[in-house]
Image (cartoon, rainbow, N blue to C red; front, side, top):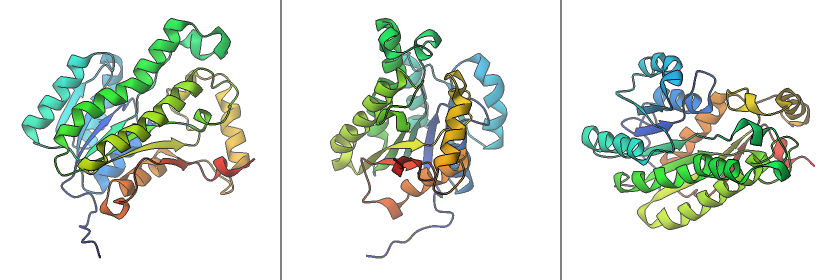
Amino acid sequence: MSLDIPRPILKDKKALVCGVANEHSIAYGCAKAFHELGAQLALTYANDKTKTHTEPLARELEAPIYMPLDATRLDDMEAVFSRIEKEWGRLDILVHSIAWAPKEDLQGGLLDCSASGFGQAMDISCHSFVRLARLAAPLMKEGGTMFTMSYYGANKVVPNYNVMGPVKAALEACARYLAYELGQKQIRVHAISPGPLQTRAASGLKDFDLMLNEAARRAPLGELVDIMDVGYSCAFLATPLARRLSGETLYIDGGVNIMA
């Protein structure tokens, strides 16, 4: 059966992008790609500090909904979805690009990671996606697509990735189980695994520059990816062109993940 694809391809779609921190963040790449392709945006920011950097981006992307969202606060999440329901009545796309761990636990080895630090990393970086999905699903009345951001260190050991490796592995498993549970509602769920990108979150990793250089050296395509590569790939997955894809972990890394 042929598909009647509108131009621009995401025209009239409603997208919530959580985790925009600045113009270098993966979430911003997704939001910008969605906007270019016709979607209407709701953006969230973590706190007053990030608001300084993200408010101009919300204006640039003409986002009519721009709200605070602390991933540890259920009332923040409920307020965002309540406004989306009131103003839009539905949601088509959800992007979860939220990750955090205490610096001392992130920069130390897994053996030295505290129980509280591990729990915080798991709650904010992983279970927050489940919480967002629970609130988003009722608004995806005609189906939709959910995304969360992972990394190669979820499946292979990457030196200095430390506690985030197990956390991202759990996140990818959550994406698969949510894809199963939400499939009957025509909601598709994907974990996106970009190559290393120079984002604010990545700056907290020890020797991150070495990870960037190694990825560029090993990539079959010979270069690093950027945030727009991630954004356009997610945009494709949110269209009917990808209507039979769900539960995937999609690597956007120039082919690094296939190398031994």
